[in-house]
Amino acid sequence: MKHSNKKLLIILLFGKSGAGKGTQADLLIDKFGLKYIGSGDLLRARKNKKDFTGKKIAEVMQKGGLMPTPVIFKLWVDKVEGLKNEKKLKGFIIDGSPRKIAETYLIDELLKWYDWDKNLKAILIDISNKEAIWRLTKRRQCKKCKELIPFVGEFRKIKKCPKCGGELMKRPDDSLAAVKNRLKWFKTDVQPILNYYRKTGRLIKINGEQSIEDVFEDVLKDLGK
Ligand SMILES: [Zn+2]
Image 1 (cartoon, helix red, strand yellow):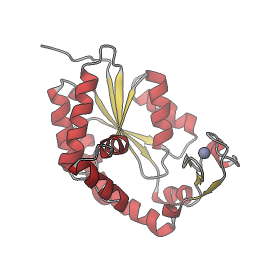
Image 2 (cartoon, protein in one colour):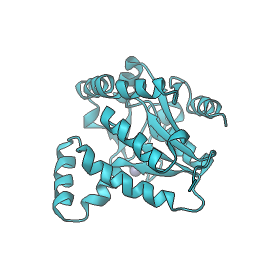
Image 3 (tube, protein in one colour):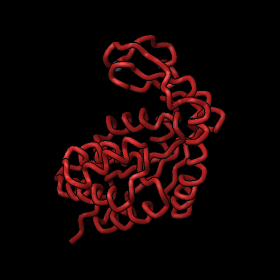
Image 4 (cartoon, protein in one colour):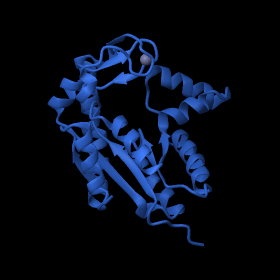
């Protein structure tokens, strides 16, 4: 039984906070009709089932803790199984995972099971620590709908939330100390994951210190699209 599809795109997006991953994910989804798998969304949906794990997920999320791999992995397996059974699937983007090297191996094994391991591309939107700090301490969030407004391109000029017209403010988690903490996590935890994808020939590194359009153009070029 062969179900592999050479054209199917499976994309993992990586980047320091502020690199503009979310924006590039949206552009890729629009361009190729991809599905989106966000660990955050999966967890929020699972939390609504008020059983033991649902309640515990709510607790961990509230404390901002890291979800244990078996819990998040169960959700991915169910999600990927659903996608495999879709007739006209063009591909999907996994956002917010893997967060540990162990999860990286598990994702590979999972994709191998579905005969999709060759379709995976890991895209790093690369920005320096200096740029990340600059962008994060300057970005804003909508008071009403919580939409994040990146400090890049046209977004720098807007005064009101583009989604709901709400007032914009600085985010408390974007203090310098918090940003530095996230950069430290990127170095210790994410860098080994990127090294693994580089060694297995699936890493695409993009200069993220350009306009949104130029970043996207480079992504398309390196995907061979
Ligand atoms: Zn808003």
